[in-house]
Image (tube, rainbow, N blue to C red; front, side, top):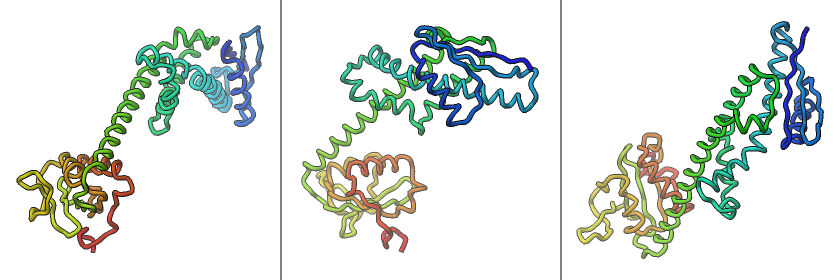
Length: 295
């Protein structure tokens, strides 16, 4: 049976590529047939695989597995060694980050790019895998640095878009953090009107606010917070934050009828999320009382 040879050349990543391929053979116990030849500073790594056109079904499957894994080794080298300098260079050039900015937030950007929840690293890896598989269908020799400088421009664009998205997300988080900190400071400076404020979910779109004495809370004609006979706040849910944080001045919030949370609107959930962030441990969920309609 004839064989196919695939050669990979690299200068910058010789040690890393060698280490990763050796690990595949030892830890993954893959029978990769390869050889290394260090020519000056350039590592030439040759992978020998069966010719799939003349291979049996079993040999064909084994060949595909081996080809996948040596391509995965290339992807790991690109993502773990090449990407970070590219990301930091873009942060400097496009977003004008200083070395101090990168030192402070560079790791956060990389974490967002590689987060399992976001799946960004996996998506980039799948894209690069398709690109490399297509490349090796045309050619048997790959120079890693040359590929990244020229044919890999599309991958540059994929990474750049994800960097831009990660920066925007970080900025939004910082703005939200600043807003929450401002709310906390204002709340601490406001005179205490109601030590404990009770918040009851009435429906998917309605809430009520009431005092510890069981009286609904409202606003007087003079604009002052007060107990009233009104059963509901009667305002859009997004406006609930204003009276809670700036008028009622509570030190603690208790949420009732939490069994209705799955039916509540996104607007109410957003308000509850902000209140929980601002009040922290002082935002409590009632375990179930008569006023929760769970007794």
